[in-house]
Image (cartoon, rainbow, N blue to C red; front, side, top):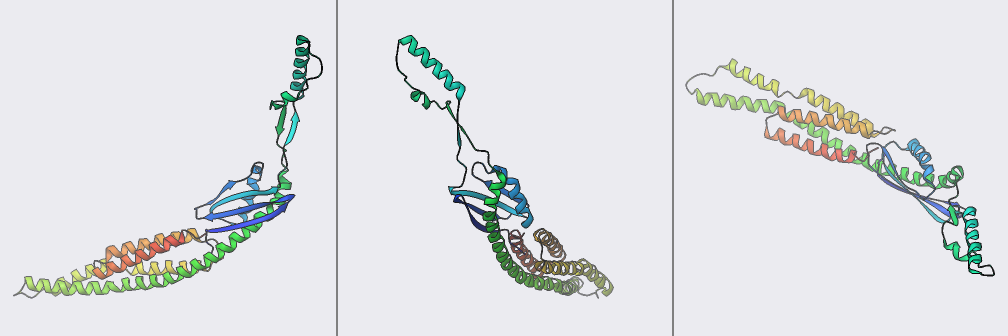
Length: 291
């Protein structure tokens, strides 16, 4: 079992500097990468996504890549020759018009940004990935290690809560016969009070009690709940992502708890069902962080 919450950092040397990669992971229903990359590295997003998908199945992953030192190719300066010649022609025309001698040069015109163009060097994505990948793998290793550690802690906590839930479901199921017996006693006393001088119809009383007993029968709900709890416990030991499965099992357990609440019109039984749903909510909050 792995958590979806983790952080990882990696660094790899490149040229006269280094690439630094940081991964921050939080829970999400799907694998949801978000990038913050230096200029020129946008072309690596698909490769990073594929590398993530090999090792992670769920979680929002914030991926930040930073350049430390001279790791990016410098921009290339390009002379705008047609425009330079036009400036030269205008200068010659100006000299003739004003009768000037000498060569005033082009220095004043070089301040014009149109004369010298800046062209970003086309990145070699294969080379960039070869330089960046070790830092990315290192960060991903740290993320997986943290997710595994946190996952083990979550599994331990969930297992302890399952013990409590099993006991609560058993106690709630055990209340059903007591609810029926209490109803039988109260019904008999009430009928006796109303019919003080008459003998109550034992068969009719037995029928009424039997009807309530049928309504209060939570055997099926208790059996299904124990089955779901058993599957939940087995999933804690599974060597695969189980977050979605655990979430489904909690929905089913909550359904059984609601049914038991409606079938057991008794204060103690109702309180037990409330306790069950409280623990299920605590489990659900934990499960939201499981891959």
